[in-house]
Each structure stands twice: as C-alpha cells, then as structure tokens.
Image 1 (cartoon, rainbow, N blue to C red):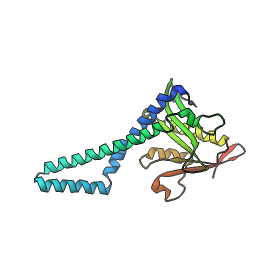
Image 2 (image 1 turned 90 degrees about the vertical axis):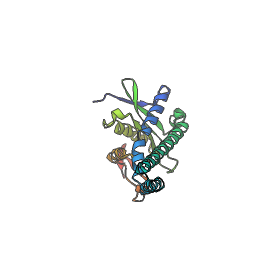
Image 3 (image 1 turned 120 degrees about the vertical axis):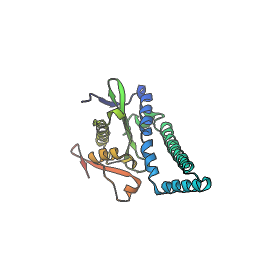
Image 4 (image 1 turned 45 degrees about the horizontal axis):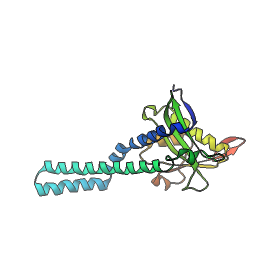
Length: 218
C-alpha cells in the first residue's frame, strides 16, 4: 500500500509538476506512432513508396529502406507534434500555476500527490473555456511506476470533492483515444460520454449535483 499525501500545490513543487507533465505526455508518443502506422492512408503511402522505389531501382532492399525512411519521418512528425503540445502546456497554465489555479475566493485549485518527499502525481481543476458553465479537470498525471495503484483516482476524487463543496454542477475532461487506461479510470468515477458523436472527438463529461451536502450523479 502506498502511503502518499494529496495536498494543495506549493511554489516549491513548480519544477516537479512541470517535469511530471512533460514526462507523462511523452510516454504516449510510441502509442500514437503505432496508431499512425495503422491508418489506411499511411499504409497506402508506405506501399506506394515501396513500389515506386522498387520500380525505379529494381531492388527490393532499396524499397524496404525507403519504407524505413518514411516510417522514421512519421515517428519524427509525431514527436514534433507532442513536443509542441508539451511546450504549449508549459507556456499556459503550468507557467504560473498559482495564478491560474490558486487565488483567494476562486473555485479552482491544483493538487499534488507526495510520496516520501517526492511529487508523484498532479491534478488541477478550473472553469472550462470550451464548455461555459462547466469546470474542467486538467493536468492529471501520475509517474509511470505508480500506475495502477489508485493514485490517479484519488487525485480526481479530491478535485471533484472540492468543486462539489463549491456548488459546481458540471465537470468535464478532455482526453484522447490513445489513453485507454485513462478512459477506464474516468468511467469508474462517473464520467460519461455526453452523446454518441462525442466519442468521435473523445470528449467526456461528468455531471453531478449537490443533495444534502453529498454528490449525486445525474
């Protein structure tokens, strides 16, 4: 059993939070790369490159090397996209965590999970820009060695309990199709797809309401 503590963010956690976010994001590069290779358009392009080079050179080996070059280019493209996304997050809310999440009287907050003096997980919640009237769970990240320990679930529940105490009626979370383990987590704590078309854009919404100080899914 992990003896971790979930507490509010402190300024001393700044570097650790940004590192956990960046590392966690990069861990999906391999999965996205494999998914990209499974796309019909990519597979058609690989076949086309092989046939073209084989016809021009008359060498199967050269054709295979050509495919390898295209696959390397796809991998580098995926890495580039991920790095751009990481830098975007680091320049937005994670650039000034306290200003974004922890202000007197605000209904937003940011927490870290601490284990033996080290930060091993994070979560934040704040008003959602894309969904007016809703609050958004953000920056849910747990170090890989602590996956499957219930830490992410505990972090999410901490955030949901916080907004429940502040009379927030609706919480949403944006995820991606590659985060299948994350989908299981969100299902387990009450997140639902708002509509069948939403599955296509991988958008999950959790609605809840107060009843005698408790939380009721609706």
